[in-house]
Image 1 (cartoon, one colour):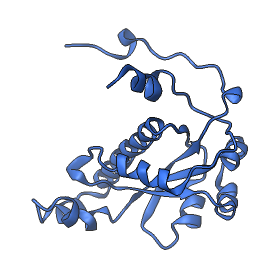
Image 2 (tube, one colour):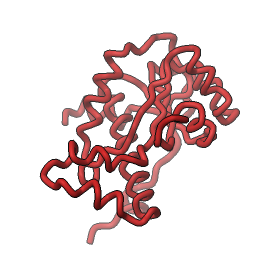
Image 3 (spheres, helix red, strand yellow):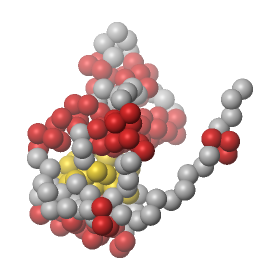
Image 4 (tube, helix red, strand yellow):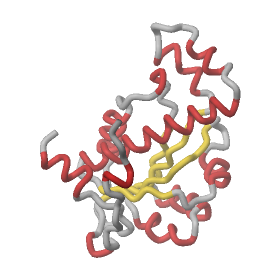
Amino acid sequence: MSDQLLQQIFLEARTHNGWLAEPVDDATLRHLYEALRLGPTAANSVPARIVFVKSPEAKERLRPCLAEGNVEKTMSAPVTAIIAYDTRFHEKMPKLFPARPTMGEALAAMPPEQRDFLLLQNASLQAGYLILAARALGLDCGPMAGFDREKVDATFFADLPWKSILLVNLGHGDPEKLFPRNPRLDFEEACRIE
């Protein structure tokens, strides 16, 4: 990885709360998905499903689902990605893992709490891939957990077996609206080598 890309994805990248009035086109969102979908997940299960909320009408449907502190920044973002997982992800396994035709049945037969953990863990990985891919494509991100999952699911997934886990605002961030960067833990505080 070039130092420039490392700077862009991690070292200089920030969580944005304000947005410039620059649209994000559909081709960029497709390119973003094409990149993130190749990140590894358990048994290639790729359980994440994404709704890119762009239109004013869809944004208004999202508004009542948001925590109060997230309304303005979400409504002004060019795109809000709703990251969800598909509770029937196992039905796609014949396509996703053709070398093991019974993989879908094995995953479907997992105890519910184990399957839910697998779904949350792997869809969360894919949310991370989305953020990294977006930054690599020159977009800024503002991930948020401050929303009513049940309202989002009822509003956007009423006819689907999807469960939301995270919202990520996407666009070109307004540097004037950035908060100071908060500290992070040092290696010695967060890691050990054995």
